[in-house]
Length: 362
Image 1: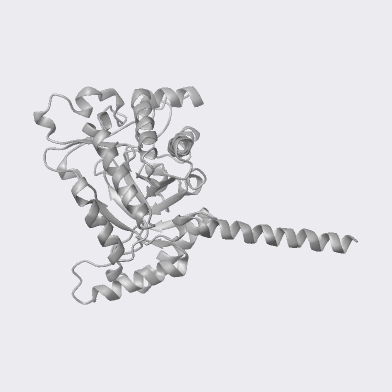
Image 2: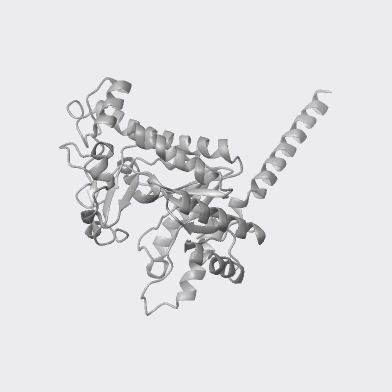
Protein backbone atom coordinates (compact mmCIF):
# COMPACT_ATOMS: atom_id res chain seq x y z
CA UNK A 1 0.00 0.00 0.00
CA UNK A 2 2.85 2.38 0.86
CA UNK A 3 4.49 1.65 -2.49
CA UNK A 4 1.20 2.27 -4.31
CA UNK A 5 0.71 5.59 -2.52
CA UNK A 6 4.26 6.59 -3.34
CA UNK A 7 3.70 5.80 -7.02
CA UNK A 8 0.51 7.88 -7.01
CA UNK A 9 2.38 10.82 -5.48
CA UNK A 10 5.15 10.55 -8.08
CA UNK A 11 2.56 10.37 -10.88
CA UNK A 12 0.78 13.46 -9.56
CA UNK A 13 4.07 15.35 -9.35
CA UNK A 14 4.94 14.41 -12.93
CA UNK A 15 1.50 15.46 -14.15
CA UNK A 16 1.79 18.75 -12.28
CA UNK A 17 5.18 19.37 -13.87
CA UNK A 18 3.80 18.60 -17.32
CA UNK A 19 0.82 20.92 -16.87
CA UNK A 20 3.13 23.64 -15.52
CA UNK A 21 5.38 23.37 -18.59
CA UNK A 22 2.45 23.33 -21.02
CA UNK A 23 1.07 26.44 -19.34
CA UNK A 24 4.42 28.18 -19.64
CA UNK A 25 4.73 27.29 -23.32
CA UNK A 26 1.22 28.56 -24.05
CA UNK A 27 2.30 31.99 -22.83
CA UNK A 28 2.94 34.10 -25.94
CA UNK A 29 6.09 35.63 -24.46
CA UNK A 30 7.91 32.32 -25.01
CA UNK A 31 7.16 32.35 -28.74
CA UNK A 32 8.13 35.84 -29.85
CA UNK A 33 10.31 36.78 -32.82
CA UNK A 34 10.45 40.50 -32.20
CA UNK A 35 10.93 43.53 -34.43
CA UNK A 36 10.81 47.12 -33.21
CA UNK A 37 8.94 49.95 -34.90
CA UNK A 38 8.46 53.69 -34.43
CA UNK A 39 4.73 54.28 -34.03
CA UNK A 40 2.41 56.95 -35.33
CA UNK A 41 -1.07 56.73 -36.86
CA UNK A 42 0.28 56.88 -40.40
CA UNK A 43 2.71 54.01 -39.76
CA UNK A 44 0.22 51.44 -38.46
CA UNK A 45 -0.61 49.79 -41.80
CA UNK A 46 3.07 49.55 -42.72
CA UNK A 47 3.97 47.99 -39.36
CA UNK A 48 1.29 45.31 -39.76
CA UNK A 49 2.31 44.57 -43.36
CA UNK A 50 6.00 44.25 -42.43
CA UNK A 51 5.17 41.94 -39.53
CA UNK A 52 3.27 39.60 -41.84
CA UNK A 53 5.97 39.62 -44.51
CA UNK A 54 8.82 38.94 -42.09
CA UNK A 55 7.01 36.40 -39.86
CA UNK A 56 7.39 38.60 -36.80
CA UNK A 57 5.45 37.53 -33.74
CA UNK A 58 5.57 40.14 -31.01
CA UNK A 59 5.43 43.65 -32.49
CA UNK A 60 7.28 46.23 -30.41
CA UNK A 61 6.19 49.84 -30.92
CA UNK A 62 7.92 53.00 -29.77
CA UNK A 63 5.30 55.49 -28.67
CA UNK A 64 6.74 56.59 -25.35
CA UNK A 65 4.20 58.29 -23.11
CA UNK A 66 6.05 58.53 -19.80
CA UNK A 67 9.44 59.46 -21.25
CA UNK A 68 8.28 62.55 -23.17
CA UNK A 69 7.16 65.46 -21.05
CA UNK A 70 4.34 66.56 -23.34
CA UNK A 71 2.70 63.12 -23.40
CA UNK A 72 3.48 62.52 -19.73
CA UNK A 73 1.17 65.48 -19.10
CA UNK A 74 -1.29 64.80 -21.92
CA UNK A 75 -1.24 61.18 -23.16
CA UNK A 76 -4.56 61.03 -25.01
CA UNK A 77 -3.30 61.16 -28.61
CA UNK A 78 -0.68 58.48 -28.04
CA UNK A 79 -3.13 56.29 -26.15
CA UNK A 80 -5.47 56.30 -29.14
CA UNK A 81 -2.61 55.31 -31.45
CA UNK A 82 -1.66 52.45 -29.12
CA UNK A 83 -5.28 51.30 -29.11
CA UNK A 84 -5.36 51.29 -32.91
CA UNK A 85 -2.12 49.31 -33.41
CA UNK A 86 -3.30 46.78 -30.83
CA UNK A 87 -6.59 46.24 -32.66
CA UNK A 88 -4.81 45.79 -36.00
CA UNK A 89 -2.24 43.38 -34.53
CA UNK A 90 -5.00 41.25 -33.03
CA UNK A 91 -6.74 41.04 -36.42
CA UNK A 92 -3.72 39.10 -37.73
CA UNK A 93 -3.43 37.02 -34.52
CA UNK A 94 -0.29 38.82 -33.44
CA UNK A 95 0.76 40.45 -30.18
CA UNK A 96 2.02 43.96 -29.61
CA UNK A 97 3.77 45.71 -26.76
CA UNK A 98 4.70 49.33 -26.25
CA UNK A 99 7.88 51.00 -25.04
CA UNK A 100 7.80 53.43 -22.12
CA UNK A 101 10.71 55.01 -20.27
CA UNK A 102 11.36 53.98 -16.70
CA UNK A 103 12.96 56.88 -14.83
CA UNK A 104 13.88 59.10 -17.79
CA UNK A 105 11.96 61.99 -19.34
CA UNK A 106 12.85 64.24 -22.29
CA UNK A 107 11.58 67.72 -23.10
CA UNK A 108 12.43 68.71 -26.71
CA UNK A 109 13.57 72.25 -27.59
CA UNK A 110 13.89 72.95 -23.89
CA UNK A 111 15.67 76.30 -24.16
CA UNK A 112 12.70 77.81 -25.98
CA UNK A 113 10.03 76.49 -23.64
CA UNK A 114 8.72 78.05 -20.48
CA UNK A 115 7.78 74.63 -19.12
CA UNK A 116 10.15 71.68 -19.11
CA UNK A 117 10.36 68.77 -16.73
CA UNK A 118 13.30 70.26 -14.84
CA UNK A 119 12.00 73.83 -14.84
CA UNK A 120 8.68 72.64 -13.43
CA UNK A 121 9.92 69.96 -11.04
CA UNK A 122 13.62 70.27 -10.12
CA UNK A 123 12.96 68.42 -6.85
CA UNK A 124 11.79 65.30 -8.72
CA UNK A 125 15.17 64.78 -10.41
CA UNK A 126 17.93 62.46 -9.18
CA UNK A 127 21.09 64.11 -7.81
CA UNK A 128 24.63 63.13 -6.93
CA UNK A 129 26.02 63.57 -3.44
CA UNK A 130 27.02 67.22 -4.02
CA UNK A 131 23.55 68.08 -5.32
CA UNK A 132 24.26 68.09 -9.07
CA UNK A 133 21.00 67.24 -10.90
CA UNK A 134 20.81 64.34 -13.35
CA UNK A 135 20.08 66.51 -16.37
CA UNK A 136 21.71 65.84 -19.75
CA UNK A 137 21.89 66.93 -23.38
CA UNK A 138 22.66 65.55 -26.82
CA UNK A 139 26.38 64.98 -26.21
CA UNK A 140 25.60 62.56 -23.38
CA UNK A 141 23.64 59.85 -25.27
CA UNK A 142 22.80 59.06 -28.88
CA UNK A 143 19.02 59.11 -28.30
CA UNK A 144 19.04 62.66 -26.91
CA UNK A 145 18.47 65.10 -29.78
CA UNK A 146 20.01 68.54 -30.10
CA UNK A 147 18.15 70.92 -27.81
CA UNK A 148 16.59 68.18 -25.69
CA UNK A 149 16.52 68.33 -21.91
CA UNK A 150 16.99 64.79 -20.61
CA UNK A 151 16.36 64.13 -16.90
CA UNK A 152 16.51 61.06 -14.68
CA UNK A 153 13.87 60.98 -11.98
CA UNK A 154 13.83 59.81 -8.38
CA UNK A 155 11.44 56.87 -7.93
CA UNK A 156 10.59 58.40 -4.54
CA UNK A 157 9.24 61.63 -6.06
CA UNK A 158 5.73 61.08 -4.76
CA UNK A 159 3.61 63.17 -7.14
CA UNK A 160 5.58 62.03 -10.19
CA UNK A 161 5.08 58.39 -9.21
CA UNK A 162 1.32 58.86 -8.85
CA UNK A 163 1.08 60.31 -12.36
CA UNK A 164 3.41 57.65 -13.76
CA UNK A 165 1.30 54.79 -12.39
CA UNK A 166 -1.84 56.43 -13.74
CA UNK A 167 -0.25 56.52 -17.19
CA UNK A 168 0.65 52.84 -16.85
CA UNK A 169 -2.98 52.04 -16.06
CA UNK A 170 -4.18 54.08 -19.04
CA UNK A 171 -1.80 52.27 -21.37
CA UNK A 172 -2.89 48.87 -20.05
CA UNK A 173 -6.52 49.88 -20.62
CA UNK A 174 -5.93 50.19 -24.38
CA UNK A 175 -5.85 46.39 -24.60
CA UNK A 176 -2.13 46.30 -25.41
CA UNK A 177 -0.51 42.90 -24.82
CA UNK A 178 2.55 44.20 -23.02
CA UNK A 179 4.19 47.28 -21.51
CA UNK A 180 7.94 47.43 -21.98
CA UNK A 181 9.76 49.52 -19.35
CA UNK A 182 13.17 50.72 -20.48
CA UNK A 183 16.09 50.58 -18.02
CA UNK A 184 14.61 51.57 -14.65
CA UNK A 185 17.99 52.73 -13.29
CA UNK A 186 19.68 54.97 -10.83
CA UNK A 187 21.82 57.42 -12.78
CA UNK A 188 25.28 55.83 -12.82
CA UNK A 189 25.66 54.96 -16.50
CA UNK A 190 26.44 58.31 -18.17
CA UNK A 191 29.94 59.72 -18.35
CA UNK A 192 30.90 61.46 -15.13
CA UNK A 193 28.23 59.63 -13.11
CA UNK A 194 29.77 56.15 -12.97
CA UNK A 195 30.88 56.54 -9.34
CA UNK A 196 28.01 58.71 -8.16
CA UNK A 197 26.02 55.92 -6.49
CA UNK A 198 23.00 58.19 -7.01
CA UNK A 199 20.56 59.33 -5.96
CA UNK A 200 20.89 61.81 -3.14
CA UNK A 201 17.76 63.83 -3.86
CA UNK A 202 15.71 64.79 -0.80
CA UNK A 203 13.02 62.14 -1.40
CA UNK A 204 15.50 59.27 -1.63
CA UNK A 205 17.65 60.42 1.28
CA UNK A 206 14.54 60.74 3.46
CA UNK A 207 13.33 57.25 2.57
CA UNK A 208 16.75 55.73 3.31
CA UNK A 209 16.78 57.49 6.67
CA UNK A 210 13.29 56.15 7.38
CA UNK A 211 14.29 52.57 6.56
CA UNK A 212 17.78 52.44 8.10
CA UNK A 213 18.21 55.41 10.41
CA UNK A 214 21.27 56.48 8.39
CA UNK A 215 21.96 59.75 6.59
CA UNK A 216 23.03 58.69 3.10
CA UNK A 217 24.98 61.91 2.60
CA UNK A 218 27.11 61.74 5.75
CA UNK A 219 26.99 58.28 7.31
CA UNK A 220 28.06 55.92 4.52
CA UNK A 221 31.37 55.51 2.68
CA UNK A 222 30.53 55.39 -1.02
CA UNK A 223 32.34 52.58 -2.83
CA UNK A 224 33.61 50.94 0.38
CA UNK A 225 32.27 47.39 0.38
CA UNK A 226 33.57 46.92 3.93
CA UNK A 227 31.26 49.65 5.20
CA UNK A 228 27.96 48.19 6.52
CA UNK A 229 26.22 51.47 5.73
CA UNK A 230 27.29 51.28 2.10
CA UNK A 231 26.01 47.70 1.85
CA UNK A 232 22.67 48.93 3.19
CA UNK A 233 22.71 51.67 0.53
CA UNK A 234 23.35 49.09 -2.21
CA UNK A 235 20.53 46.84 -1.01
CA UNK A 236 18.17 49.78 -0.58
CA UNK A 237 18.80 50.99 -4.14
CA UNK A 238 18.23 47.53 -5.64
CA UNK A 239 15.10 46.87 -3.60
CA UNK A 240 13.75 50.28 -4.61
CA UNK A 241 13.86 49.43 -8.32
CA UNK A 242 12.43 45.95 -7.77
CA UNK A 243 9.57 47.52 -5.82
CA UNK A 244 9.07 50.10 -8.58
CA UNK A 245 8.67 47.38 -11.21
CA UNK A 246 6.42 45.42 -8.85
CA UNK A 247 4.12 48.42 -8.50
CA UNK A 248 4.04 48.87 -12.28
CA UNK A 249 3.08 45.23 -12.71
CA UNK A 250 0.31 45.43 -10.11
CA UNK A 251 -1.17 48.49 -11.79
CA UNK A 252 -1.00 46.79 -15.18
CA UNK A 253 -2.71 43.64 -13.94
CA UNK A 254 -5.48 45.49 -12.08
CA UNK A 255 -6.57 47.06 -15.35
CA UNK A 256 -5.64 44.35 -17.86
CA UNK A 257 -4.78 40.97 -16.29
CA UNK A 258 -3.53 39.58 -19.62
CA UNK A 259 -1.08 42.43 -20.25
CA UNK A 260 2.56 41.49 -19.68
CA UNK A 261 5.05 43.64 -17.79
CA UNK A 262 8.46 43.62 -19.47
CA UNK A 263 11.64 45.21 -18.13
CA UNK A 264 14.66 46.01 -20.28
CA UNK A 265 17.88 45.54 -18.32
CA UNK A 266 21.55 45.74 -19.22
CA UNK A 267 24.04 44.33 -18.53
CA UNK A 268 22.33 42.12 -15.94
CA UNK A 269 25.55 40.49 -14.75
CA UNK A 270 28.81 41.74 -13.21
CA UNK A 271 29.58 44.70 -10.97
CA UNK A 272 27.45 47.14 -12.96
CA UNK A 273 24.33 45.54 -11.45
CA UNK A 274 24.89 47.08 -8.04
CA UNK A 275 25.74 50.46 -9.59
CA UNK A 276 22.62 50.85 -11.71
CA UNK A 277 20.59 49.07 -9.04
CA UNK A 278 18.63 46.69 -11.28
CA UNK A 279 18.94 43.14 -9.92
CA UNK A 280 17.58 40.79 -12.60
CA UNK A 281 17.57 37.85 -10.19
CA UNK A 282 15.03 39.59 -7.94
CA UNK A 283 13.29 41.50 -10.72
CA UNK A 284 12.27 38.30 -12.50
CA UNK A 285 10.01 37.64 -9.51
CA UNK A 286 7.91 40.78 -10.09
CA UNK A 287 7.68 41.03 -13.91
CA UNK A 288 6.58 38.67 -16.68
CA UNK A 289 9.63 39.01 -18.92
CA UNK A 290 13.06 40.61 -18.90
CA UNK A 291 14.54 41.81 -22.19
CA UNK A 292 18.31 41.64 -21.78
CA UNK A 293 20.45 44.05 -23.77
CA UNK A 294 23.46 41.85 -23.23
CA UNK A 295 26.73 41.15 -25.01
CA UNK A 296 30.11 39.64 -24.22
CA UNK A 297 33.38 40.80 -25.70
CA UNK A 298 32.57 42.87 -28.76
CA UNK A 299 29.13 44.46 -28.96
CA UNK A 300 28.28 43.08 -32.41
CA UNK A 301 28.08 39.35 -33.08
CA UNK A 302 30.17 39.77 -36.23
CA UNK A 303 33.17 40.91 -34.18
CA UNK A 304 33.23 38.30 -31.42
CA UNK A 305 35.98 35.80 -30.71
CA UNK A 306 35.22 32.17 -29.82
CA UNK A 307 35.71 32.88 -26.11
CA UNK A 308 33.19 35.72 -26.35
CA UNK A 309 30.56 33.35 -27.69
CA UNK A 310 31.29 30.92 -24.87
CA UNK A 311 30.80 33.62 -22.25
CA UNK A 312 27.72 34.95 -24.04
CA UNK A 313 26.03 31.56 -23.91
CA UNK A 314 26.96 31.14 -20.24
CA UNK A 315 25.35 34.52 -19.56
CA UNK A 316 22.15 33.56 -21.36
CA UNK A 317 21.93 30.26 -19.48
CA UNK A 318 22.36 32.24 -16.26
CA UNK A 319 19.42 34.45 -17.20
CA UNK A 320 17.34 31.38 -18.02
CA UNK A 321 18.11 29.94 -14.58
CA UNK A 322 17.02 33.21 -12.97
CA UNK A 323 13.84 33.29 -15.06
CA UNK A 324 12.67 29.74 -14.30
CA UNK A 325 9.36 29.42 -16.20
CA UNK A 326 9.38 33.01 -17.51
CA UNK A 327 10.71 34.11 -20.88
CA UNK A 328 14.07 35.80 -21.48
CA UNK A 329 14.33 38.07 -24.50
CA UNK A 330 17.69 39.02 -25.99
CA UNK A 331 18.01 42.52 -27.41
CA UNK A 332 21.17 41.95 -29.44
CA UNK A 333 23.09 43.31 -32.42
CA UNK A 334 24.53 41.18 -35.18
CA UNK A 335 26.60 43.23 -37.62
CA UNK A 336 27.92 46.71 -38.41
CA UNK A 337 30.54 47.58 -41.04
CA UNK A 338 32.64 44.43 -40.68
CA UNK A 339 33.74 43.82 -44.27
CA UNK A 340 35.23 40.42 -43.42
CA UNK A 341 31.92 38.96 -42.27
CA UNK A 342 28.79 38.37 -44.33
CA UNK A 343 25.91 39.99 -42.38
CA UNK A 344 23.69 36.93 -42.76
CA UNK A 345 26.37 34.72 -41.20
CA UNK A 346 26.57 36.96 -38.13
CA UNK A 347 22.78 36.90 -37.85
CA UNK A 348 22.70 33.10 -38.07
CA UNK A 349 25.38 32.71 -35.40
CA UNK A 350 23.55 35.07 -33.07
CA UNK A 351 20.22 33.34 -33.65
CA UNK A 352 21.74 29.88 -33.14
CA UNK A 353 23.32 30.87 -29.83
CA UNK A 354 20.03 32.26 -28.55
CA UNK A 355 18.01 29.28 -29.76
CA UNK A 356 20.48 26.94 -28.04
CA UNK A 357 20.16 28.91 -24.80
CA UNK A 358 16.36 28.90 -24.74
CA UNK A 359 15.97 32.66 -25.18
CA UNK A 360 13.89 34.67 -27.65
CA UNK A 361 15.44 36.88 -30.28
CA UNK A 362 14.88 40.55 -30.96
